[in-house]
Image (cartoon, rainbow, N blue to C red):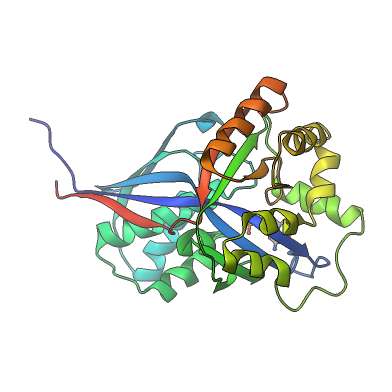
Length: 307
Ligand code: C5P
């Protein structure tokens, strides 16, 4: 007879940085940021099943590139939650990837956020949101936003969040590159270029925030920006062709997502996004192009099995 264990499935979104201002590297190796995040409908799903020890399996696109050892952010999240709560239980973690690996869309951070939420439910530890956000911030700069979702301004390392007013739904195409980029490497190239802003803006771009409040995709497209883009383009020069092709296909705006190499393309509608995705695929300027929308909710439980 098959024994069914209790399990909880949680889902967490990937992100695109609508704007990303980066200051000069600080003594701790991190760069101060002023960024606006939007959570999008490319999601990671994590199922946590009761077990005496920790184990991990990963499936979906790019799964073969995900480390399964102690450096995996989902496993680190599980250990951090156990330590924080004093729980002495394990879990089998099963991740289904929907966010490009090493793509600048916070796929690993979404795994961590979904794991925290799933295990908090499985173990019955019932941490408050602020407590979960605190554990998340210890795991990586983007993990708190993957927990929170929607649209938010991030400062500090990008982990100090304020929810932003945004109206309506925005339609995106994400042009994926066959080979990912390492975030630390992109920041290193950024430093070598001497690009770090001495004076980081005190707050997020006025025009961008106004476009979000109005739900105005045309104005949002004009306001997209990313200080890391020149460094990412130097490390992956082929991205220039992707950006040009997206503009030629009628995009409202085009920006490298975070540290790249995924190129985020803003469209007028879902149908417009599909036609841009088809044009990019036919032009052969990306490995694949996927459509998504935002904003969407942060990490949340989507299914529980009592076992
Ligand atoms: O926090 P996380 O582990 O996701 O960051 C990955 C790497 O990206 C860091 O080790 C650092 O090199 C770089 N980073 C940075 N400044 C930030 C966020 C990330 O330099 N604000």
